[in-house]
Length: 271
DNA sequence: AGAGGTACCTGGCAGC
DNA sequence: TGCTGCCAGGTACCTC
Image (cartoon, rainbow, N blue to C red; front, side, top):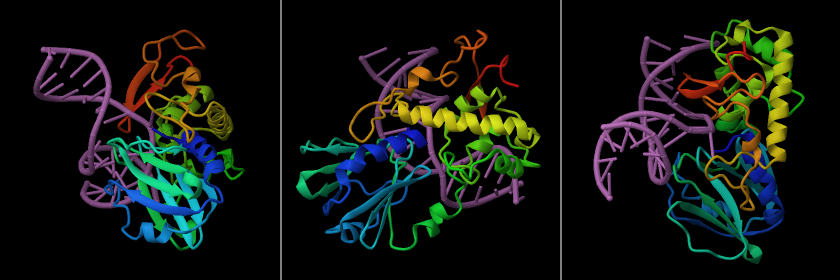
């Protein structure tokens, strides 16, 4: 489900409801996510005040006294604020109860998400230590991508979806950014010029920013922290449009498998 | 070192 | 209607 814009939408949605609140209780109904939720997590969190809520790539980082709660939404996860208690459904695996009655509920049908704890320096956590730069930061430049891609034979699409190269770009926005940049998704990353990387970096930033403004992309069931769907789907140029006319040239959008992921492109516009 | 495949899990849908 | 197989927004980990 969630790529960077959806995670950022979630972060912005829940932040005003949780910041400064104290955690009363953690209720885990299903601890078997991608990794088991640590048994000690409830002890770490109980009575702690939420100091900060940040995002690194697709990880949400909820800083409390003495450590950080690391949440990943996986493929199908979502976090929602509930002001009034509602009975938990079969995929509502975790509730975080806060002072004042606010409830942060984690729902994740496929259970690829994660709830982890670290008391150490967050940037040294094994899941975060080797991540590439944030795509919306000044560290993400054409020079960086060009330099990192020399001699790489992987497709440009796999390359920009590699979190060691750049974080947050998943299947939807990789397809969309390459369409905007007019680069064929199967082109070898090592055979793209600096000039084309300039365009690609701009395209990635633009498509992510536009998606954040629209509250992310809802394909079937994504909702942000306040329960609203995202509206970026209306602006998709390639993703999911197999056979439909390219919005630039009218040629049918094609679909192929690349690195086990569905890939959508216009064979006229993208080279 | 880099590239590719596998695994984790459930639900929805196309096709028979 | 019901079964089967395939697909899905992610990514760590394994092998070659």
